[in-house]
Length: 309
Length: 138
Ligand code: SF4
Image 1 (cartoon, each protein chain N blue to C red):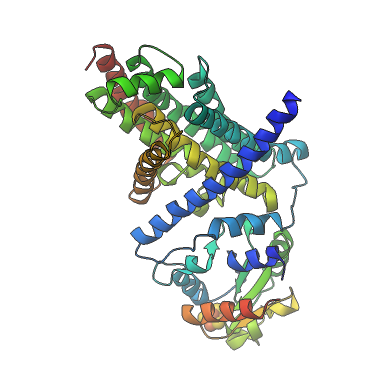
Image 2: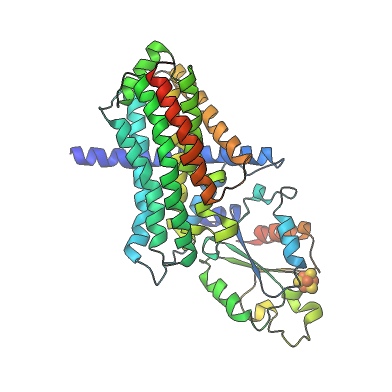
């Protein structure tokens, strides 16, 4: 009985998250269009894309690992959905457990890993260039991302529970209102651009150089699963940042929900602006940027936090 | 009309195949994808790989070297897909119809759905052709 309940809830949250995610990616696309002085796609654009992809033929490449090729995109969607469910429980039901912060850090890696798995099992040369880039990208953004997570964890009294972090912020004010908070926010914002794979760091899927990179062999609904995972990440990652830095108000009441949406939109628009004002970087530049400056600033931020600035 | 066909009409991902054109049609296609013409309002975006594509925009007479490649790209595209012959060359051969390297025109090699003549066709006429085709599609 319990298993059925959990499974049903999972399916439900998958649909809800996909709908929100596709809508939110439309906001991103529309905003991009407006910045480039265009009209942009209509609101149902992403839904049309997914429905169309589900109606197309699925081609499976002959000289690859067929099981992994089909399994990897599903894995990506599942892990992204679980991330969303954990965050939903924390916000809505006030339900969490010690260490859910660490769980989320692990779960957020899996969508990138699924791209690597899928690309490497498709048996394409350009895909292998793509996955080597994705792997290096994963290694590079993870370090500053974790710096950006450690800062609010220390600030809220060395806890790894999201509930504790929210409670602490409700009593003492949002984490961003301090020097170390601002540093941490900037770091986590930039590294989350790598996480959702938008333009300055989208070199794993670079269309102009390696023709879609890791996703080159995917077609039909399998490609649609990757798109869904990406749009669910567009919901999950900004809300994660809102919880960590912007106070993450509980969404039990209507006003709390509205405040949360406004905060979420602020983070989303910041990510979109970063994506529209920067060109794509080379992989060595990305590596130097993340492990050099950003990590240094992150360690500085952690030192500031420990000294209470 | 089924939902999937409706969705297909609203979200065409374009892959650009050059079968030995004089490069002028290709420049017009690149023009088409710039912010000025903004084809994203019809849901049209440039796909990176033929596996992602719904529309093949083919330019040029298909010359002898390109026949195999054009066929290969057509087979790699998941069906249903739309093939558009852009430019007089791919419609009929144009000024190169008597050339020694001519193996086309395009509809000898793969089935073509839309013909857009012009040497080269303006981006406006490419948009007009595709929109007209979408209206006809049932
Ligand atoms: S139709 Fe004209 S512009 Fe286009 S490829 Fe042929 S010769 Fe060039």
